[in-house]
Structures are given as C-alpha cells and as structure tokens.
Amino acid sequence: MSSLQDRLGLLIAKSRREDKKSPWGAPVPQEADRHALTVQVVDLIFEEAITEKASDIHIEPDPDGYLRVRYRVDGKLYIALIITDQSIAVMARIKIMAGLDTDAISKLKSQDSRCTVHIGNEDYDFRLSTFPTVNGEKMALRLIGKSSDTISLENTGLTNRDLILLTQMIQRKQGLLLVCGPTGSGKTTTLYSLLTKINSPSINVVSIEDPVEYRLPGVNQCDIKTKFDFSFADGLRAILRQDPNIILVGEIRDKETADIALRASMTGHLVLSSIHTNSAIGTIMRLINMGLDPYMVSYALNGTLAQRLVRAICDKCRVPYTLTSAQLNKLNVTYGITPDMLMAARPQAPSSVDREGVVYLTSTKDKEKDTSSQVVLYQGKGCEFCRGTGFHGRVGIFELVSLNEELREAIVHNVSSTQMVEIAARNGTKPLFKDALEKVKKGITTLDEVGSILLERS
Image (cartoon, rainbow, N blue to C red; front, top):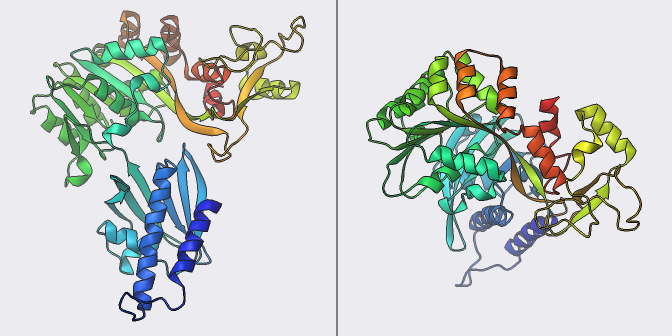
C-alpha cells in the first residue's frame, strides 16, 4: 500500500502549493483545483490496478468518512490506498465516466454500468456496480478482459490426458460440454479458451452471455444485460435460428435453458456452457434432478469439467521446507492425508525443483540416510516480485469426466452418484483433490491453498 499511498500524498501536496497560478498569472479557482486532483487520483487508481494485474477494484466508505481502495489480485483482496481527503470525489468522477447519476438519491440505490479508461496506449473496459451501505455508497469495478488476455488451453494447468480428451470433445460436431465450479473458479476463462482453440472462419460461433467478459474476434456475442426482458432461454431459441455450428451459453440456470441446450446439442450443434455444481459427476446428477430425461442427458452429454482456481507459488522466491511430525499429524486428522500421499514419485537428491516442478525428497547432506519418512514441499518466502505474498498468478485444479458407454448406461439406469464416481475413476478420471495434491507435490501451489478442495473430499 505504501507506494501508492506515497504517490497520492505527492499529488495532494502538488495540488496545494501556494501561489498556484494559471498560465496568465491569475489564481486557479479552488473548485477547478479539486476537480483536477480528483481526475488525477482516479487515473492513479486505474493505472495501479492495471500494473498490479488486479481483476477487481473495491472502493469502500469508512465510518469516519474515509475511502478505502482495495485490489483483488490472484483472487485475494488487499488494501491499496486510503483516501482521507473528503474533497477528492473519486466515486462521483467514476460515475460520471460511466454515465451514472450522481445526485443524492442515486446514492441510495444500486446502479450498474461500464466505463472505458485509456491507460498508456491501451483502452481498458470496466464493469461497475454501486451499492448503498450503512457507511455510504460502495463501488466495485471488474476489469473486462480483451481477447488477447485469454489463456491458452495448454496453460490452464490441465494434465496431458485431460487436455487430449477436451480437445477431442470440442472437435465433435455436436454434443454438450459443461464446465462447473463456484463463482470465481475460472469457468468463463476456460470456456473462452475452448472457443479460441476451435474458432475459425469456416464455422459460425454464437454466444449468449451475462455479461460478455471478453470480446472474441469472429464470435457473434450477445450480452443479455443490454436486452430488455431477454433471458438465456429466449436468447438460445433465437440463436438456433442463426445457423450456428457452435453455441456458447454463459450459464445454465434453470430447467428451461438446460432443456433447450440439451436439445440443441442433439440436433447438430456443439454447445458449451457452465453450471454451478461442485463436481463433474455432481453436474450429471444436477441435470437429472432438474427434471431432464436421463436418456437425453446420457445421449447428448460429451463431458463435464469441474474446476477451482488456486494461487501459484512465486517462482522468484520459492523455497523448500520439510513438514514436521505435528504438521503431518494435523494433515492426517484434518484431511485424511498420509505422508505417502505427499511423497514425490521420483526420490533423488534435490538441488531445486526440476523443470516440471517435481519435488525431490532425499537429503543431500546424507545420501545414505533413510529419509523416506520426510515430506519436502515448497512455499514462497515473499519478495518484491510477488509483493511479499509468496504467490504470483493462479493455476487451475481440474476434474474431467468423459462419457463412455459404461457411464451412459449408468445414467440411463439412474445409478447413484457414488457408483458413477467409481465408474469414472475406473476410466481414468482424477478427482479434484488428487489433482490438487499433485500440484502441491510438484511445488506449483501450497497445501493451504488447496485446503478447501481437500475438505470437499472429506
């Protein structure tokens, strides 16, 4: 926070210099002075957010009348700036940029809009929302990504097996592929990565989203937030009259949308969408519990991908550490994890993590000594590159279920979710918690980061 706070202090000091005059020698009016300072402060907030690669900006009122600015970086919020000067009208300035009302009544209701900010040689789009709180008006801004910001499928953290299976699924002429997970788990980014991989001038790709997160060249995107009385189901019906090859439905929220998507995937269209469920098998059960015909689900569904996002250990300050007996015992009690589950597959003398991030366990001090009971993992000690957090960037944790004949038969016969999990495992599906542990063992992330995923298992 100190660097941005210092820059704010310099701006305020500069704006309050005595004998400040216009080019013609006349004093600058105080009101113009305050407006110029506000514009500079708002520009500073946006510039720093872009520099820090923040996904969100939160501007929040304090009971004492201050403003607190927080950035969300790699999924975590941190305080970036405290604005104590109440004459700096940050929210009013941003609302004007977004074309929102700024009167006293507007502060008592929620408003939504967008604004474009020019920083350097680039334009950045932000989606913003205001919200009345007991301390005053709060504002949240989400950076809307550009097509160049999309992550390639190969860099998401998918295993080679899952990458091959997903690529095969999206090359089919028809069928339904669902990506599932909680809010903020990267579902939209994965869907866009899939679209980017298969999009070409020879096919017609149409999407309906709420809202459009990235602008993808060559894709006909519809933002239902800009349409009056227009739902996903309405949009999906309209899309089917647009001669589509591939359809992206931002989210399946109800039975009607699910039913139309399912039928579209059975009539010569590849349909990609997301749904709020916790696991890949849970997605199948959710569709059936919505009231969809199990036979249709088994016939249309190509696969389901469950995912989470966790912070990745900073490459610049990653260091090894050995788990103590107390830590190992706590892991066993809390998550049911034994030392064997954390041992790397290739024990040999370590100098550092190898190019694929595999953690080696044998001690360099005494090669003859048996260290089979030791568990060596990695963590970031904190550096300037990662702002002292020990993390930089995020990586996905995945669970992919590809439907084969055995699983399709199980769906038709309405077997339990436990039996479906067993069938999927026999056919190579790696559960979320196992993928999480693999990334911990390879020094990609930490046990603390994947703790919630491990708890879902227990």
